[in-house]
Image 1 (tube, one colour):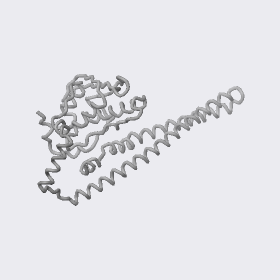
Image 2: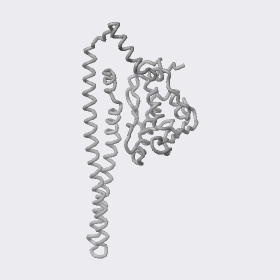
Image 3: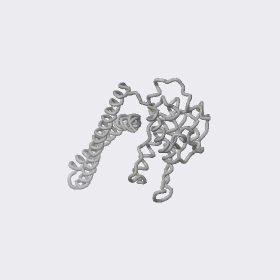
Image 4: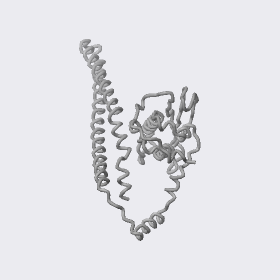
Length: 284
């Protein structure tokens, strides 16, 4: 019944790499709008997903519409991770517990969730999953049997298994290579997150400079209006100064946006993958 969970195809080198999420092929997906439901602890946000398929070899020519919560995206991510063990699944935006219903947070999450779906649909393996089609068609999402079984194992069951292993004299052999790799991954994870935090700080400062250029341009334009009837030369000088500084602001902003899109976002994705998670699990 869950055949695709356990039978994997041979590993392909290109499975590890993401493709350009801004590229749109024969399947075009977008999140058109968001809507908040409920109040207090029961409040949640739904995302309206529109999918257009144009002569696609898998989906044909049709349109899908679905309303999904963030938890539904988590289901899709975890299901793909379970079914495609040799593929690095594109990360989801982090779960924000503070101000999660503020317009800025919702807009950011909407953009990142759309980016996640584009990456999934552009991957030659992930796009073939029936779970992806179910998700886009607004079908019912069912937890895989393996996931249900693992979560149904309680604390005392796990404790009993550990005690039984001790009584039977089961001793795990320490693999020196595993320990070496674990420490390497832990250090890599730490440095990667540190690098991202510093990069993000630099980006923020550069965005502040863009704001300063905008304000300077506005002030020069305002002063030009003051001199309009008094000194034509000063008026033209400050008009030109306002025009130049405005252009500088635009160029700086475009540069920052490109760096965020092609560099900082990639770093953030890597940090969200939590490459050290297996080592943490091994210690529990």
